[in-house]
Image 1 (tube, rainbow, N blue to C red):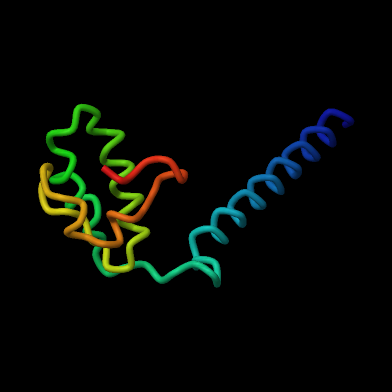
Image 2: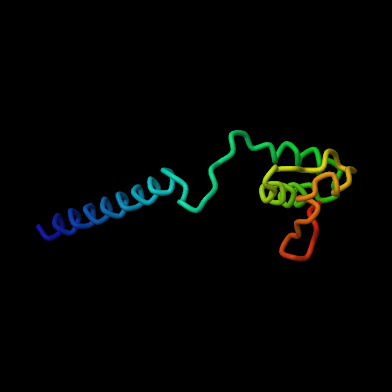
Length: 104
C-alpha cells in the first residue's frame, strides 16, 4: 500500500515537472520580448558573410564575427567579396567587436 502511494506521488511530481518545462518552452517559442526588434523578412547576413569570409584563414571565426557585425548595421551592409574595402559599408567599417577589433 505504501509502495503504491510513493509511486503515485512520484509519478504526479514527475508530471508536474514535465508540465512546467513544457510551459517554459511554449513561453519562449511564442513571441519575442517587447524590446526586441522585429525579425527581418530574409536574413541576408549569412550569405553575404560567407562570400566575405571565403578566403579567410579562420573561416568559422570570420563568419561568426561578420554575421554579428552585419546584424548590428541597420542596412545589413557587408563589403562585397573577400578583398573589398570596409569603407564600402560605412556602418560596418565603424563597428568594433568588444571595442578592440574591426569587423573582418
